[in-house]
Length: 555
Image (cartoon, rainbow, N blue to C red; front, side):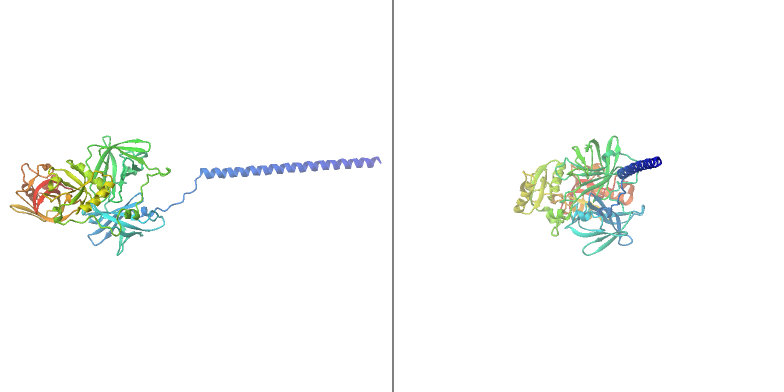
C-alpha cells in the first residue's frame, strides 16, 4: 500500500514538473519569438530610414533635356553661288528671339575667312513662342524683316517675308514661298560680333556675380538688356517693335580703373566701337557711370546720366525682367503686315526742292539736341526728319535745326499726324509749311575713284549716291556732280579732318592733290586715311557743288 502511494506521489510530482517545465518552455519560446519579431521590425525601420537618407543625400540622375529650336539653329552658315561668291549667314540669339547677320561675300585671300562685302540684318518673328522654344522640332515658321545701314540707312526694306528654317544634318534649309536655299555650317564666316572672343583665357575683368541678364530700370521707354557672359564677353540688346533691333556684342577690359566695352553692332558690319564707364553694385542693382568723354558713332547709352540695371532672377515671383519674346502678332500690331509698304522708298531728285507741311516738335541751334529729339520720335514710331530753317523760304531765316515728326503733302494730312504726335506726349507740336528750298544741303557717298574725272577747270564725280536729311533719313538718289574753282569750304567746316589739306586750299586744289597721290603715291594718299573716300556733307545747286561742310570716312 505504501509502495503504491509512493509510486503515485512520484508520478504526480513528475507530472507537475513536466507541466511546469512545459509551461516555462512555451513562455520562453513566446518571449524569444516576440524578441525576434521586434528585432525584425527594428531592422526594417533601419532599412527604411537608410533608404530615405540615401534618397536625400544622393540626387537622382538628371534626365538630359533637348535644347530649344531657337538655340539649336544658331550658328554660322554659307551657301556657295559660284567659285567666288557666297551667301553668308550667322544666326544669333538673345532671349528666345533670333537675329541674323546676312550678306554676300568671298574668301579673303590672307586669312581664308569668308568676309561679306555687302551685308544686312535680319529679324525673325515666330508665330508663337512655343514654336520657337520647342525642343522636339527641327523646323519653325518665322516672318522676317530686314534692314541695312549701307543701302537704306537702317529702315526696313518692306513687308515681312514668311520663311521656314529647317535644321538639317549639315546645316539649315531656308524655305521661302518660291525657293529653298541650303546653307551648310561654315566656321570660316567672319563673326557678326568679332569682339566676342570665347577663346581668350586671360581674365581682364572680374564679373563676380554679375554673370547673367540685367534689365535697364531707369528708362520709361524701351529698356536696354545687358547679358554678361563668361570670358568677359557681353551682349547688349534693345528692341522697339516698330523699329529695327539694336544688338551689340563685345567684351570688357580694364583701363586705368575704368571698364571699357569694345563692341560691334548687328547691321553695321565689323566697325568697332568703344564705350567707357565705371560701375557700382548694390545687391541686384548694377549702376553704370558713363565717362563724359565717350565718343561713339553708335552710342549704347546716353552719356550724361547713370544707367541703372537690375539683375534678372528666374525664380523671382512675378518677375518682369525676362526678355520678351516678340512674335508675328507683335509686328502685325505695329503695322507690319502683308499690306505694309516700306518707308524706305527713294525720293526723286525733284522732291528735294519742294515744300511740305511739317509737324514740328523742336527747334535748336544745337545739332546734337536736334538729333536726340529726332531719335526719340523715331523710337516712338514716327518717320522723323531734321532740316536747317535758313534753307527754306518760309522758315526762320536764322539757322535752327528743326525736327518734324513727318513730311506731309497737305495740311489735312498734317492734321492727322499732329493728333498722333500729341497723343504720344508732344503737346506743343504744331503744323507749319516750309516753303521752297533755298539751299540744297545733302550728303554724297563715294566708294572708289574709278568714276572720277579730273580736268584743268573742274572735277567730275559720276554716279554719286546722294541722301538728303531734310527729306528724311531714307531718301536716296544717284547724281553726277562737279567741283570747280567756285566750290569752297564753308566757314564752319573743320578742314583738319580732310586728309592732306593744306592751309589756303580751295576744294579743287585739295581734291586734285589727293587724286594725284592716289594714282602715284599711295602711302602719301593714305597717310591720314583715304581722303577722297567716304561720306561728305555738301550743298549743291543743280549739279554744282557749292560748299563742303564735313568729311566722314571709314576703313
